[in-house]
Image (cartoon, rainbow, N blue to C red; front, side, top):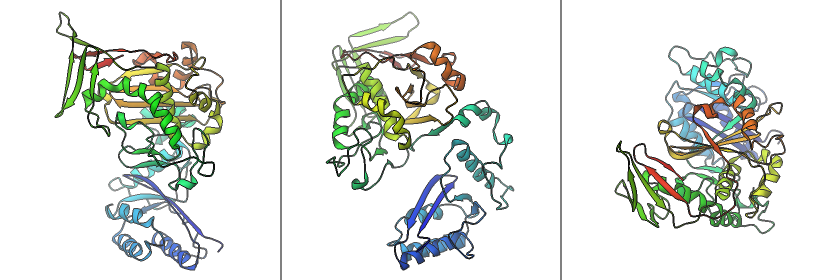
Length: 436
């Protein structure tokens, strides 16, 4: 067969998804032909895409997909997902249907804008083709316009936290560990579920299929312990439930637990000032390593970043896999506590540079956990000339990303000391801030 593959990228008001199906015999080839005909007129070579990228849901489309699913679900199992998506959309709702997923952030934004415009009252699209050149300067709102350089120079990616999101191949025999390079053929095992963000701080849905069992265990007994120790008070206050249940933590001078939706903290060291502000100090029984904390942040980013970026980050991976190597001239890490920007589930944002003429970092990452925000740079990228380990070098970052500057409240420090210590935490009850 000459044309034996059908590939679609759907973008709807509720999100996007891809569908890729191959035909291996006459029966499956006929199934692909029939699927294509649901969305496009058949003229000659049916694998040629129609000029229209905006489509509208109709009762006819829903019924044809329902019948098609009943007929071909064994041959094209992915059709169940597509049928479920379309069946829950409203008739008349516009969506984009493209042959490939948009690569750049700008193109993704343009697709999103076209779908939004197609669903505005009295502004249905004519069905004409749209391309990356069709939306000019008017596309950018005033807010987005402030960050035009970011959108043009960087790609933004954040895995969804509201649905199961798996990074990497579903079949174990097709997987390659991102961290050690192991495969099933070289003896690596992929039996354990590897959470890209630790489950202990609230992640349920983002899974990395490209982390072997040995690396998963290594990270769990080293770096992740310091990450959990840092967030323990947050876990109690916010009632973050892990596989062991709600946390109950013992301290040298007290204890803390979450029960029936209420956090309870007890300590021998409580201070109240003349304004009625109360500070509770808790001395940890567990060890914390600030360098391990930073490595844990980097590990999360490397778990979800596009694999095409990994060749430039081999020195980063080598540093990460050596628990004794603290690193030299590590980038500063930004911290911000923002009551207005609460995240009910941990969220990670990967911002990778596509314009190498910029002197800002190759890979910039943001982790959001509850009220906490952490901004960090993956160190030792081959695409970075600067180390971003000083305030002067960080100015190059702020030129492109002013929203991360110290002017808006971000505090920067290094997490470079590879030493185990028992930290003291302070709970400030007047604004629920917790600082180590």
